[in-house]
Amino acid sequence: MLVTCHHVWNDFQKAQQQNPELKMLVCLDSGPFVVLDAEKPLGEDKKLDIATFDMEPLLGACGGRKYYPLNQKPPRKVERGAVLFVVGFPAHFRTVKDIHLSYGRQAIAMVVADCNHDGSKFISNITSLNLTSDQLAGISGSPCFLVRENFPIQLVGFVTEAAMNILHFTHARCLSPDGTIKTPTELPASTK
Image (cartoon, rainbow, N blue to C red; front, side):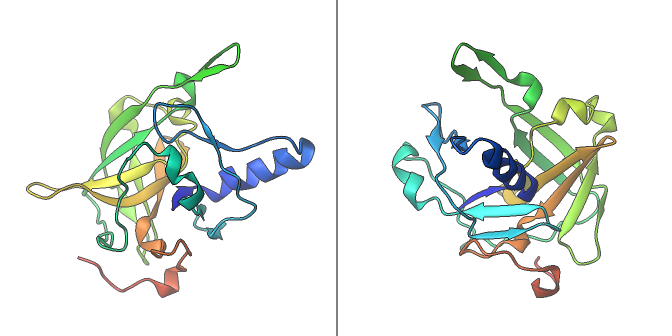
């Protein structure tokens, strides 16, 4: 499945109403962009700000890449103080020349500042990273990984917002392996 934010999908749909020829493009590798020709997501939730799409039609453009096996490695619950690693493509790194778009990747390490009571959302303060929310605009939907000593990194969430020097995340526990979205009441009490 492909994951992005509900607000990204919603904004695209609004823009497409104004221009029916508009397409959503996905960069799956260093090659050309691929059209995401989806009429609707597999799952979407406005409150969690997440939307998922079927990747099956796009696998031929993936260049043999491997993807995170969500069905084999359920995401751990995160707690305050956990170390996170985010990889995103902020808008301020994007340039357009003629018909070519280039973009830069930014890796960010941070610490969980707080989690909500049901474990569906968490936040991190970026003030100490010498970054501003404006510098991180455009990273909505970027994956977030839990980093623990002597363990492989593990997918735990997706960036949903950068505002007032706080990064907001939706926990990957909200995704079912089939791409549907679990409501916070459907989440397991704990995942260690």
